[in-house]
Amino acid sequence: MWKNVKAAPADSILGLTEAFRNDPNVKKVNLGVGVYKDEEGRTPILACVKAAEKILLEKEGTKSYLPISGDPTYAKEVQNLLFGEASEVITSGRAVTAHAPGGTGALRVGGDLLKKFYPAAKVWISKPTWANHKGVFQTAGFELAEYAYYNPATRAVDFGAMTACLEKVPAGDIVLLHACCHNPSGVDLNSDQWRQVAAIGKEKGWIPFLDFAYQGFGESVEADRCGIEEFAATGVDFFIASSFSKNFGLYNERTGALTVVCPTAEEAAVAMSHLKTTIRVIYSNPPAHGGLVVATILSDPELHKQWLGELAGMRDRIKAMRVALVEGLAARGVKGDFSSITRQRGMFSFSGLSDEIVAWLRTNKAIYVVGGGRINLAGLTKANIDYVCDAIAEALDK
Ligand code: LMR
Image 1 (tube, rainbow, N blue to C red):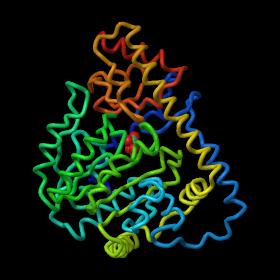
Image 2 (cartoon, rainbow, N blue to C red):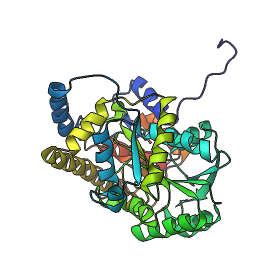
Image 3 (cartoon, rainbow, N blue to C red):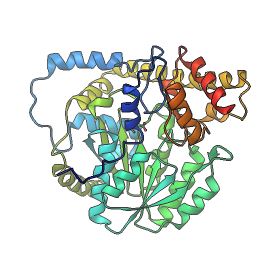
Image 4 (cartoon, protein in one colour):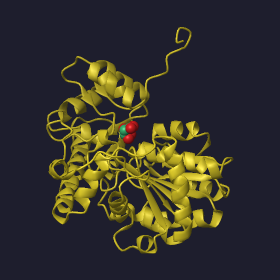
């Protein structure tokens, strides 16, 4: 069957992790995949997760199927995080949420659902975007188009170019937006800019689809949802793919959600019926464990507080590593202005390193960076920061 088939290329992000694992160099550093590392270079299980798992181990009485849309308490807690408790979206009941296997699963379910009702739509992605966005929506059968987003010259959002593109997106097309901590650039819209983008969406009639994989890694759980709040305030239909891989460290539990926000509760009920038929033919119903962990933590005031503290700890450590990297490069007299790294948010930074430098770092120093120069700051620690700064200084001196 496979004799005459050419092997597929390795995934641009997860393939890098495979290569990293196989690299025998003891000094190797993985700045590729978006996975949090602590100061010891480990990806820890949060203490609140361990506590919730202990509770579940004692209390859980069945492994029977969950409903197609997942555990209802999980859906309720997801909505509390997305919109804020007692927000109008929640009290009016005009949003429905299904547990999906990770943020990627949520994007794909959303893509399949949209394809049923908007078969001729294009999906507009930011330039640049997370590499997997393209694959997910192309495989769901959509043609892609790009809207302007990051300006490498200013290392900031080119808001004028972005809004000029979004003004031209036809009604019924889908616009995929990063709700916070833009992946890969690390540059975000402010709340005033979100308001303007939401107003354009409402006026032009395109369908917003917000990818929300890093809530709490920017400023805070509340501040990071300002884009969601602006779209909610317009009253339009929109989609949110959210994930607890990063902010709960539940990477391998595939714990995400697709939320469909509608103008009314009646429409939301119809949306849920189609969401269920979409899910049923892909994975039938979701895996339970990650969702039960999240629901247990968020519905317990003490565990919830503990989670917020642990999340702040991850966020603060990444911010400290941003400063350490910029200072480390400056101390070595590295040419170029890297100060934008401290203004970027979330796990990633567009370092400005060329693909040639990225390849040199991998071959000569076993430092793994995603093509395009995206660095995962969470992969830096006090133990490896000097090695990384020395290597970048050497590479840029070539
Ligand atoms: C990343 O961008 O590195 C993460 O979201 C992990 C992934 O699945 O690509």
